[in-house]
Image: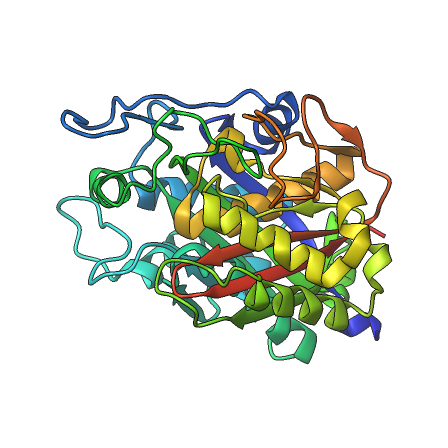
Length: 372
């Protein structure tokens, strides 16, 4: 791969119920202690489930995104001129006003957010449910690799709020026992969690010109759909398997180069079994020896922001040399014959990892991250 085509990650930031900043996120996922607790942000009277992973004293989503973008830009060492040439790709909830505007202010949403942070390049909004952020990263990487853009700040945000909470609760998707148990026997569903994240992606040449350090590279990406069911994935994981295979092809890596998977695994019965089937389809017998974990078991499902939050987790874990565990484990499920990391972190004996996401409608994404 030509050096100009390499897509560098030069800055990150994340907020979750584990705290603010990369250090809080990394220490929280490595500790493996779930951050779920009673919802205080709104009234849950009459709900089946009354817990989520929320951070106290958060601001508006617009303010938290502004802080996240600014923090990631500072971490990447972007000055005013660098920011002025940077694009903003935003993943957030859809609707007529996907990014709430503070009361009394009449501003266009995404351009206003870019202007707040000094970003003067093109803007895009992604509202494709739980693959919104990972799709934004894939698009940004493709445009950078192709030479269309030098730098893209990808940001994503979801703060647990009553409307989506009510929908998931009414649909009986939330874990009735108040715990997320990815790939485990006895899993009963997902739990929502706060997530606001930002990453700076740029070409190797752009990073080199300003002497920026690289945290990792987005080596490959894949997107696919299985069009099987509005809410359930294909039981054989066909779409997700194609996404993983595409990411490996783009990255030019053999299957045995991957040493860790940050799984989508939400703790729902059908979805986790489908993901296990997809990994088995791609990696064959090696799937049973490939370390896998789902940090949603700790920080919850941040919907549109999940893909970016989990990308940051993956980058930080590889950089720290420790792979995070999966909480909530009760016992093996024969439908999920995977090497699930449990109880404690494992040493990262790899420079290459996958982070996977899936959404209603059969949409699937895979991002291949490398620190070599």
